[in-house]
Image (cartoon, rainbow, N blue to C red; front, top):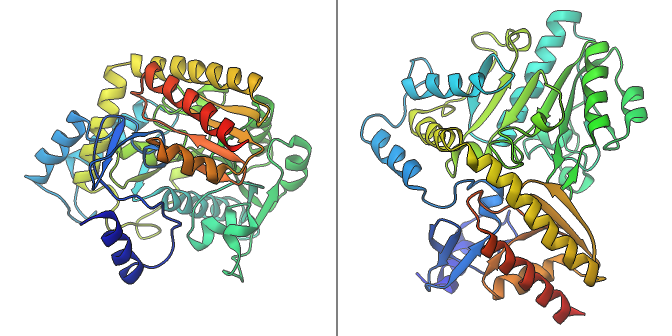
Length: 398
């Protein structure tokens, strides 16, 4: 089917929940994707920070093929080797003692919220139930996670929202201190607000989150759905900041393209979940766990991938900052590793369109912010192409 036929079919049969680009993709390889007409695109969106090893990485596709020949799915009433092995790898390379598997970042955050409430109830009773999250945050689109999300546009039309959520400005230590009370079960914070415009938490703010939560008997929960699995040049972004959380959520890059989420926790927090308190039919099935194991094996066995991500992120930032220096329409460049935001005075959505016309895929997180999240295997030549082309499309719009 051609692009126009697929667009017509989508309009007829799919619910209208996405502002889709007029582009139908058929295949991908490495940092490139190809549409149904055969046109090539350099993918600096990577499934929104999902395809950390690029498209169709040979070790990931082989792991999927081999596992599919043995066992694709079974109930979590039974043990499976890929799930146990994946949990062990995550525990061995993080602060955590235990893992719960699900299917997405929203589900992982839902699990974290439930875990915090149940943990607080067991410790202090039903009066401790509030979750403190950040304005401009994004944690998912389930009813609980959109309520935790500090953006009115995400919550609009879904009222009445669940009770027990409070919001503070990102990076505001004083506001955080005032908001965390004897009713607080947990603080939920992104290390980098990806959907919120690629805004990086300050070291002082994350330290305050850790100190205040510990002092006042609440859990610190880090949403690393977008930043985890090497995206920032470390396996997990919290490693840059000298803190460890009580709970951390993962998804996106963990599966390298297949749907998986994970909620990691210390033993103290994890013990709040008991049989029947939380579950997922498809969570941690053998197929996705085999893929996630392959992703982690590639990253952990080739340690230079993380170092390369850090170096390439610095290289990309340098190029974009040089562009900012000669282009008044670029007002800010920010990020960490290969999660980078560029703020512009122009309509970012129009620039997304212009870049796509020139064979480069990115997205806009807001009216004036472009987000770049390429695969970690990107090259300096590909980064150079993006920086030059971005400068060209900005100049053409002025």
